[in-house]
Length: 494
Image (cartoon, rainbow, N blue to C red):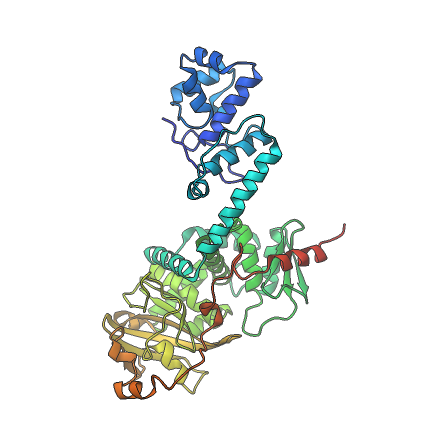
């Protein structure tokens, strides 16, 4: 039998194969060909030696015809199987009917207790469009309600599990980065701002620096006119190449508007990965790190300086390559000065604090971990190294403080004790013990807690983005109206 996918094919996909055909579209194509030849339902049924009710079920997308029957139908209609299996609807009206039929079979109609109805020929297009618009708006509101902080944390946990399973290495993204670098003639050394501009030009985009970029955005891409708008005022803590590459990454990876927070998060991870893969090309970075490993002096600071990137980008990129290319398990943390985890990754047995959903974002790091102790170090110019004995083993970390608009953050990269021999800073005398999640590790002494528990009222310094409800919208946190008005104002007139 022909396998039928109940979901519509993605826009722009090639014609469906026999394994991918959508039953509703197939049924409408058969109906269109039948009516075009002036055949009644009964006449087609007799021609293929089937009952009219069977043909009706096929045309309504409720029955899956065998391939042999599909050949018989195509022969009776004077067409081909390939023509019947095309993924696009045979007409605009048919596309509208298919969309309404699909909506009736979805969760919205079921949740509202609405009985499905027959889409009759007498229903005009406006009626069907109104029904579809109402359905889509209800579906959008439902997805927005689902985009709670809990949903965000669940999506983060699922994505982190996938990253761990792949050792945070994505060959398909590495290939995209390598092809783009080759296309613009990069032969080695740091990727310059001019080379990034050449990449934009190669992909058909021009760069425009403006002083009125919407405050909720890092960049805005006008896909219609091939323009990328960037702020004239660059943040001293942000690499000026990154916003350009992130905008290009969405183009290179064919990102569509995210349908939910999980997809939004995945797109952001892919975008950041590809940006780092361009700034620290795989072959050059692996060659550099392999040599550093042989010399037993891997250093995030030296990796950062060699490729002229930020410390955080160097740390991220190291997690991509450490296990897959250097056979070193690793963990990474970005922690706010309040002790709150912003993002983290591990495949080396380290145990991050987590909630019931398995998410670590928003949880508090043990006060004895390197990611916390680094905030107490007076020397902010030298790297901070530390061993930490934990219930799951001893880990070595290197950490550094970086500044952002919401305060200071520590960026830490660590490995299990047995792999510290490859790193610079392994001779550090700094050592701590963490018994977390044992409550006795980070809790205040009993007498002190009793004294102040009812007499204190602290104002949290945790980033507001972790405390507030997740912003709604296709792109969380972005004011779409502001973006549209900006594009309208800056669009070329000719």
